[in-house]
Length: 142
Image (cartoon, rainbow, N blue to C red):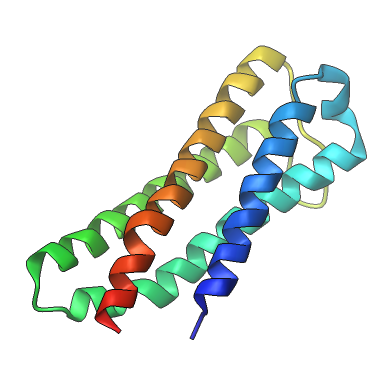
């Protein structure tokens, strides 16, 4: 069973990476550095792993509850997971080259920044929603 400490550590690392990358990637010349590309790939991996971990560990108790409101929370978070995964996949397809490469492929820096900001905002909102709504609800059922 996953611990809340582990989930919160993941959330902290993702938030930290979001903030660092948001700052660094504003400078176009930083987008082409190996360090930034490695950080960005690390971010994408951590977000994906976190969502998978939440998906596998959080919803079964909520869906088993006889309370319809609790079931709806689980269904909403599950639906949100699907959407975040689609957004990550779309972002990855547009801005990240094929596997084995650690580079970003940025032709329009401003469009990249806009897309990156939207991605970070969605992920950070998801983390906040988990922390404020999902985790306390799961704890209350345990």
